[in-house]
Image (cartoon, rainbow, N blue to C red; front, top):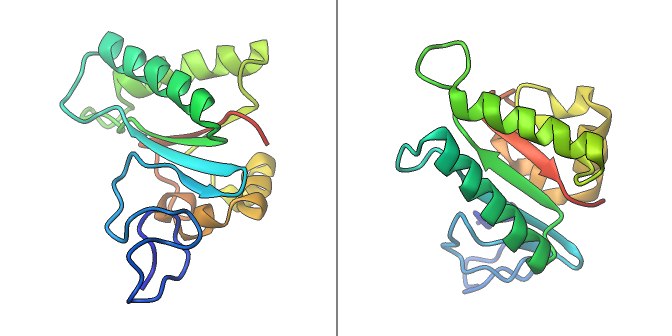
Length: 151
């Protein structure tokens, strides 16, 4: 059996994952911890928020992540129904680019960038085992962005 939260192997008899401490049927919002490493998923497209609501949700999730010691956020923002990129995705990526330029974040890796082709992506895969089993790091998913708070 594989932990749904961190992707590490877990014995079938385990109630909690020995790697990240999450329940075997872990919830998407729980951080996966490996010592000082933590990855947290944030779904901004759930309940179809406006752009402003989604950005407020991101700000709140970012504040919580910093408090919890999370190192990487996997932001699920969707791609948009028009086929050219959704408004939430575009607004979030503009905000992330500003934050990276200002030094408030280490990096933002778009889901459509294959992790093995991206220098930060390769470093994240090396440092955080759970990203190796995350389907979005392999499939170039334009509906997600990985936000690196610290390495």
